[in-house]
Image (cartoon, rainbow, N blue to C red):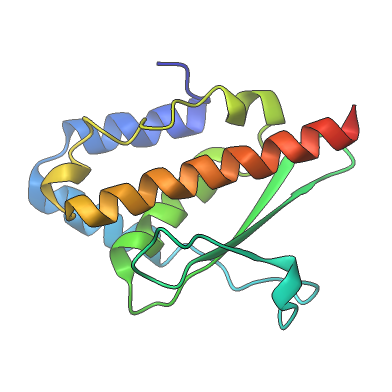
Length: 145
């Protein structure tokens, strides 16, 4: 599996942790999702909804001047598992290059124990978030080239 270093560390943490620690870690990551920056707050057109998620989940990506991707998620605090997954993605992928993000397998989260702590429906939503993220990043990369 080809993962950026920070995301690989997170995967290893979850893979090696007992179930109760994975749950706690997911909740910890849910608290790491920052609020949207002012230029995205209140601009409904700036965020794309991931309709496959049970939770109202929105996202946006931007390409920085240095060629790295900035990722933004908007997910209610009342949905800690999906928000925790967003936190994992932010920690592991924010600031990476488009190529690094596009090389991440869509189902990288399988086999690290999340299937033991979240429902299959939530797992499908997680897959949809990765797919949407990669689609947005692919669009950014195409506009850059």
